[in-house]
Length: 123
Image (cartoon, rainbow, N blue to C red; front, side):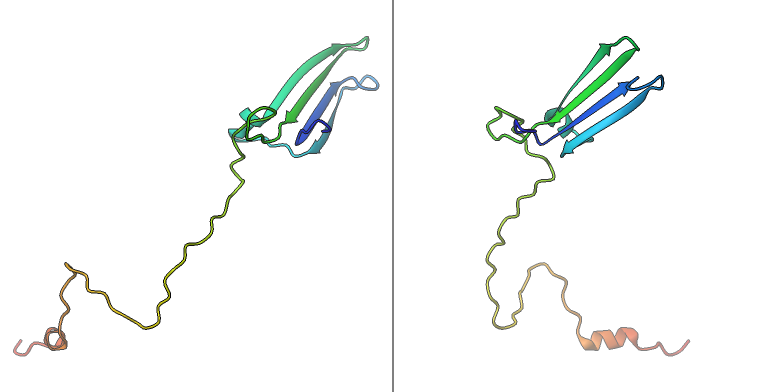
């Protein structure tokens, strides 16, 4: 963490004390566990230590920081980092107006509407 890592996770498992095997987990900082950025941001190592009582397993995961130059970490930014753009200036409308669009359906007059709705005589 002092070298600039965003997070780290250490898992030690095996016979730590006594005959019963245990697993201890130590976590500090930020650690992502899913998605494609795990392939770029997480470095992990597994080592086995042979002791007199048995084998101890040690897993270490380190999450690298984002580096735009790509020297100390991945160039690709995390997908949850959002950049908000400034809104465009919209023209101010002072009075209502109408637009004429060519190809639009012709408006039906009120006389034609009443003729369609009126009941038919002479069943």
